[in-house]
Amino acid sequence: DAKTTQPTSMDCAEGRAANLPCNHSTISGNEYVYWYRQIHSQGPQYIIHGLKNNETNEMASLIITEDRKSSTLILPHATLRDTAVYYCIVRVRDNYGQNFVFGPGTRLSVLP
Amino acid sequence: GAGVSQTPSNKVTEKGKYVELRCDPISGHTALYWYRQSLGQGPEFLIYFQGTGAADDSGLPNDRFFAVRPEGSVSTLKIQRTERGDSAVYLCASSSRLAGESGELFFGEGSRLTVL
Image 1 (cartoon, each protein chain N blue to C red):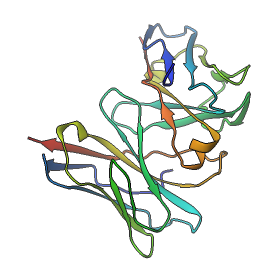
Image 2: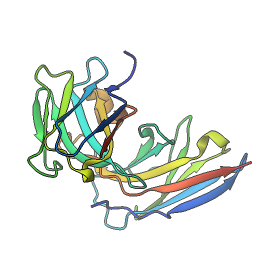
Image 3: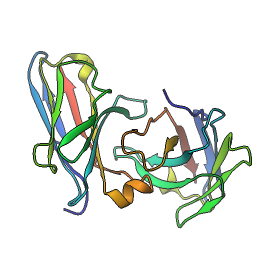
């Protein structure tokens, strides 16, 4: 079973920041937080991951609370092409024996 | 190819038939995963290969499902005596050792299976 909970859906205006929350209150000390997204009719795409420090790359920023029980994925300037289902996953890093457990994710709709 | 390739992209079959779905991972990627995705749901893990061996097949729903990766590259997911409940998009993903350490799985576009 997925170890995370996310809102079912969210809307965001084009050009504004999209903030997608994720709760992972049972996260273990050696588990990382990963984010993937899935655009309609495509396979999931990796976005970003982190352990406890905030992370940023060309796609997004990841903010993890100090107690690591929740995190927020931030798309700083959402475009229509960011409309997708976003999945938050916790997983032990470097453990090839552990698969990624996807929940239902958050359906983000970026509106013009 | 540049990405993970899955064939066929669409497969329609009749209940009770046998089906094979193929995954061609990114060249050099040692890890290969199969997932299944039903409408409105997140991907559901089926099986994971490290090289030629199945490291974790705990997600296979029953013994009608089987997967192989004989040379550590291409993998085939085999479904016997298909049932209507097997209808879904079957996703394949691969990762290299380096990419796996960052958690980056590269997914294919999926094979959509419809069992009538």
